[in-house]
Image (cartoon, rainbow, N blue to C red; front, side, top):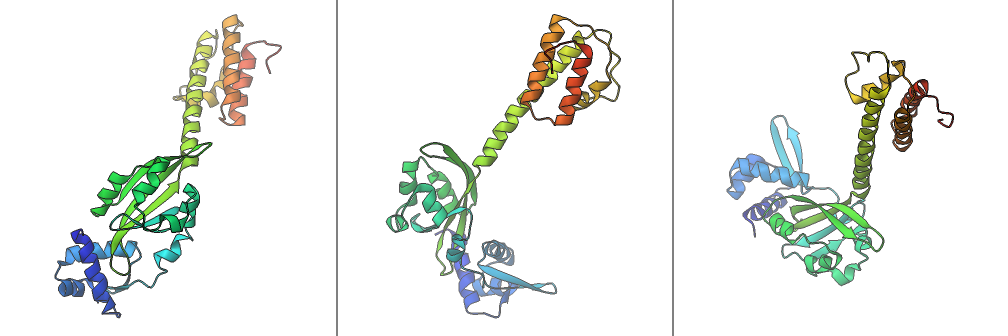
Length: 276
């Protein structure tokens, strides 16, 4: 058992014997551990919901938590949550986790967690080993579904259960929509860059246009500001470039008003009956 876990158990036991609460100094003296370490352990335990803290002036007094036990909170969570013991065996899985992998809780209870999830292409054994040393771990994993791939942020948190035994809490947070949004953003960024290049080529091909305002200093300002430009002669090159710009504007969502400004500017410089 990691040394930190032993200290957590000592703190829980001493607080059980002192329901009125204890200060960091009192706990430190009772379990024979320096105050800095005790303060660190109590901070972790407070975040995990194992102890509560009340301030009295400069002093902080700690009690065993009266909050809802984690077992009861699990099914209230929107995430997929699973509890492991110190031997990496499954203690409890919430409904979301069971539905995620289409599992039956009774069939996986007390089973080795890694042996249960490996068949789904999930391999976080090294992360679990690291978390067993007392380190919180975060990593993205993918889970293959029959018709899709879902992405999850996996958080592995070392804990000490209320009865004093160490273990792990593993939380799977679905980030698929976030990942897809990033991909769409990359595609939009690529389209925007293409649009900027096409606008640049177009402007270079337009003859006798007025000087671009000195305040226009970046591509987005250019998009908004080019409506002030004047002049220009028709040519096949300009015609083709204008069509490309129009196609880009239809593909990328840069705002209806801004897109129409650009299209009106193009119309001002070329005469295309079919251009609309």
